[in-house]
Image (tube, rainbow, N blue to C red; front, side, top):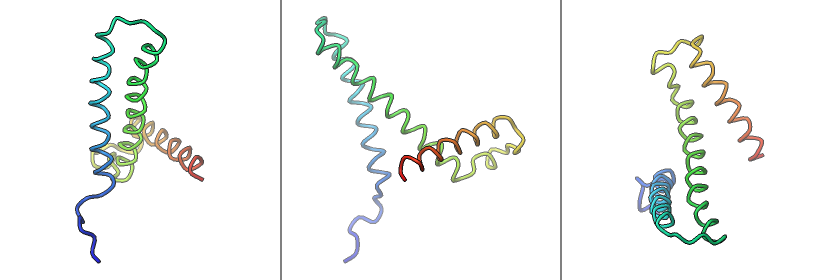
Length: 105
């Protein structure tokens, strides 16, 4: 049987999920900022949206870095390989990919 939805990929589903998680974190931040309760539980729940936003930011940074590496964004932007921006970005991406490979192995 053919796949019924050939245009939908997991990356699209994750992108939509991340967008909803970012919006939900913002709404949660707004909700807890308007509360004047200072219990330990409320303080903990105030930290959760910030941690979610931080985690999403890290995931998106790695994802955009991987995409930039795959499409060779330095060549597209006309950066020479001896450019400091190109060199630093390449080093950071290679280090990140090596760490990700170690974690997944």
